[in-house]
Length: 450
Image (cartoon, rainbow, N blue to C red):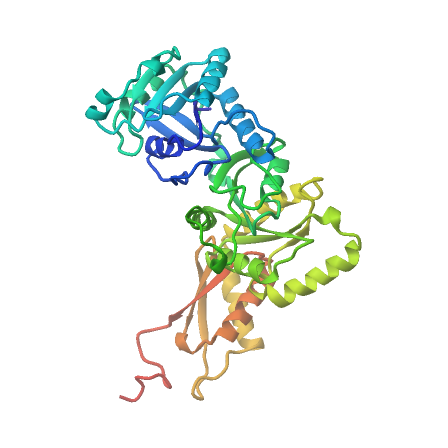
């Protein structure tokens, strides 16, 4: 396990900007408003020969009774407890606030190495103008820097890296078989609650307030010998309802998380179904070739479970036809009902999406399709398939050689995809590519007879 460096500080002092600078990627959302970061976000970084992990935390505030603010502070406290070194980020222009002083006092009692990053010092001239004496009064080593421009960041990281312990070991051998599982859904359907239940800890901030999660945040889990990378994402709303810049950025990161995922859980609320929006979210996952699990949450609040389950299955058949192959689960993230079935299904679907179908079996299948249900005639001429073979995985992609590739219409393509899933028991997206059998122009095509 790599050593861990935690970035802590008040809201809007530049922690996420510094996090992005250290890891070399724009992973954390950065906006000039306080409170954008709420969950812990981890990433790997390297300074010289030393590799380590960095965790970005939500803004530390003075004690409050507000549920969301208290939950964000608890997330920051958890990051400090597990860290090997801590970087306290302050706004050098504003100077030390009461919250800065309280946090510094708490960190001193923790007994871990603490480095004070005096952020927003954009130039030597500004550094000369600022009185940094009160920052030294904390007793920590002070590093004037600009997270936005990179000024002074290397000096900070050199000092941090020098004091970190060596890595305890490399990642497990099952790295290549890991399952990247992203959870998508409308705001407030229980995505963070579900992931907390799977992890067995309050890892993600969960609140009844919609829009609590903003970044796409990853966390690792090993379950029954398989390694999972779980991603919590921001709630996705209809485009016309999204006006806030932070929410736009959150939605973009959620969709990028889909592209990185092996399996996407589309989570819905049994008490407030948004069929059209849920269908759009599922379609976005399928269009990207990702395996999909449809999970109906808050099942503990449903009274007539048998009747409601039948009604929801019928609704799914009508409105989710493009993912009618996806497994449908009824869960309660709060009570833990059937939540681990999601992990089982994710492993099964990941393996199905990575499957390699032997070429002889594919040819046997395509010839059977041609005999039992041939493609419609094209300008009076038959469409004949000669050969089929697999060219890709995730999604499963099959190439079929035929005499008239452009003559295969969408209806017959869907028929073949459905029959392929039935034959090889696939519950994942499938793509068919039709290729010309030879260079000669078949009769009935646009260039015939010239």
